[in-house]
Image (cartoon, one colour):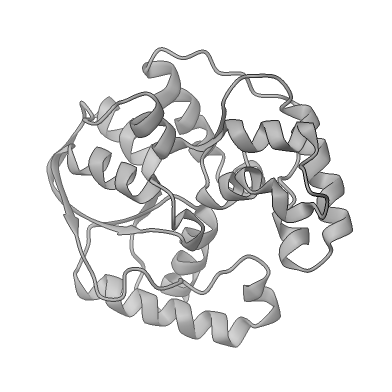
Length: 236
C-alpha cells in the first residue's frame, strides 16, 4: 500500500519499500485502484466519508496476502477498522484488511524474523529516531531500533521527550497550526540538541512536518524514512 503522501510527495519511500521486500525474496503486488486508508476524513470527524474510503481500500486489497504499509499511521488505520463501525462485528472485508495489515519495519522484523541488516554507513552516523504516535502499543518502534541498530557504523542516539508528539497530528496541523508549530519546534529542539547526522521516522507526515519547520527556521536536518535507510545502506 503506497499511501497518499508517498503517492503525492515521497515516491522514493514506496520504491524503497518494494526494493527492500524484493531483496528479502518477496514478490510485491501494487494494486492500481488504491486511494486512501480513510484516516484524514476520520480525523476530521467525517465518519461517513471515512467509512466509504475505508471500504474501497478493503475491496482493493481483498484476498489473503499481507498488506505492507510504509506508514505507522496508515497501518494503524487499517488495523483498527473497528473505529469505523458501530455494529457488534466488523464488516468481513474490513476485518480481513485489519488482520493482514503491517507497518513495513514491523513486518520485516517480527513477521519475517529479520533482526540484523547487512548494510553499512560509509562512516559513523548518528541516527535520531522519531517514533510516531500511531506506532505506540505496536512493535514497530522495537523493529526500527533492532534493524537500524544492527547496521554497521550506525549509532542510535536518544533525545529528551522522545515519546512526545511532533505536532502534525493529521488534520490537527491544519486546524490548529500555531499549536502544531510550537509542538514541532519543541520536538526539533530536543532532536537537534543531540546533533544527529540523520533524522529517521516511519511516517513521512511527521518528517514532512518537522522538516518543514526545520527548513523555515534555518536549521535543516537530513531526514529519511527507516525503509530508505535499509535500502540505502544495503546499496552503499
